[in-house]
Length: 470
Image (cartoon, rainbow, N blue to C red; front, side, top):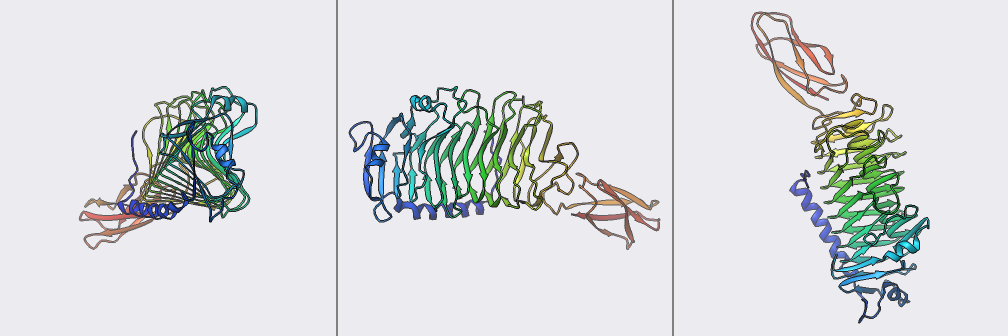
């Protein structure tokens, strides 16, 4: 797989330093009374029975539930029942595996939704060095049930840590619906994969560091196609930070109309920071409906929200001759024109392919335009769904959009035309000129594609340095 992210050494150093401090602060979590779990020879043979045995956990009396190496199958869902300060630790992702059995999928088929590992209402919980898998044994065909692997819901503040984990799921691998904006969920050094939604964020503060989060659509998994396929979805009022991570959405399903995006934002407030990370959209099928949205970042928020991409790469790609759909780095359909999207040292990259109903680094509707700022970033193309560039959104490498050059007015001439490439989105730009030979030079015929340099006298050739700034 190609890698296009080019964050600076300083960006990585800051991210790594922050992660190390956070990890050190969390070391004390996996302490207290130890309980072991394995099929035989341990304190308990199921995780649920180990949880049920805990009656007095507290901040001063935490419990650690150790899952020994091997695969531990569960026919039933597992719930903490609101118990706090319990830490689940394995021997490493892929070494200690808690896996839903085929019976779990079959027994819960027909329900509107079901959670395999439910930590709702619990705080002071950590899951470390462990694989939680509610995907592998899916028999397929259960299209009406929403299968969640790990889920948290709470109206009171909660604090949860995932570190060195692998979480595999169908409808949602990891998610929450919190009624308290003081809740904090941290994901570090983890791998998260789902067929529809990798991580669903709704209400809590999230910190994601050095992790790989993916949504890979296929046609055989349970839960059905769904309206949306996204690696990370952010809704509600929340603040989210993603550092040093890979966020990936992929589809190989022919003719799908499900929106496909690495990072989808549909919240009502808060902020998002993506730093030193790569967002990657990969269409492997050339067949898509005409209205399908495919992007690395897709926003439909109805209220003002600040979104910063710093030292990151937004990469999108498809096969040649994509049959339809909107595809790009950013798709902006927000109804709030005050929303900020800031690109700092960030590149939007078309990594290959052709086609699509609308294809560009930024795709938008004719009536909606983001407050987009960029500095030291690369945005080479914009398009409206109906065609043509988006007015007021600059391309090139900066919102300043500096272009410069030199033009010569020949000895017997009084003017010379200058062509801008790429063209400006409008004529709201400034032109600085410096002529040799002490000549007086001025500008006329200013358009989005260029302008004319003029002088009053002839006799000698005059070189004119020009700079365009927007």
